[in-house]
Length: 274
Ligand code: FES
Image (cartoon, rainbow, N blue to C red; front, top):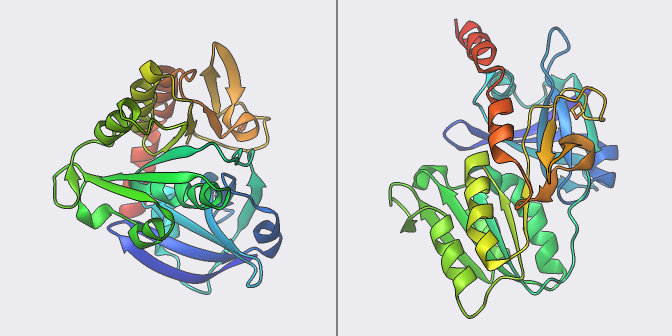
C-alpha cells in the first residue's frame, strides 16, 4: 500500500499529495510519470507526472486537478489514507542537456510536470525563460518555485487578473522573433495549448518538445490506449514518450482520441456526485 503522507490544496480543484513510494522516489527522473489507481474495486488507472520526489523521506509528489471521477475521488482522500496501486516510474526521462537559451511553457496544471524538467534544465546550465499561463490569478500554481529557478519568468492570464493578459503563445512568438531566440522550447499543458505552441515555434525552426497527456491503461505498451501519430507513424505515449517533437505530432488525431470516452467520463462523474 502507498499511503498519503501530506495533502494540500494549491488552487480551486488543484491538489498536491506526497505519497509514500520509496523505490519510485529513488528511481524517478525528470519527465517520468506514475499510473495511479486510488482503489482496486472497478478503479480507473490514470497517469500523473511525478512533480517532485524526496529520496530521504521516500515520497513522491503528485499534483492534479479534480476534473473527472478518479481525480475527484483522489481529491477526497486524506492524509493517512492508502492508495491501492502506484506503478512507476514510467516513460522516458526528459533529455536534459545544455541547449543554451531554453523556454519552458507551462499551461495550467502543466506547471506541475514542468517544474522538475525546468529545474533539471537550469542545473544543466541553461539560461531559462519560463512562461506560465492560467485562466486567472487563482489558478497560477508553483509561482514561487518557478521564480526561484527562472532567469526570466513571464506570467499570462486569460482574464488579465495577474501578469500579462495574453495567451502564452504571444510572449513565445516575441521570444522566437527576438534577439535572444530560444535554442529549445518545452511545452506542457492542455493539448490545444501545446498544439499552438508548436505552431508558433515551427516557422522559426525552434525545436519544440511537448509532453502528451493521453488516455492510458497499462502504461507498458500493451493496450494501445495511449497511441498517437507522430511523423505519420503510430507511437505509444507510455513507452515511446511522453515527450515528442511537437512539430511532428498529429494533434487533431490526439484531440479526437481524447474525446472518445467523454460521455462515459461525464456519466461516471455524475454518478460519483449523487
Ligand atoms: Fe497501454 Fe500505452 S497505456 S499501450
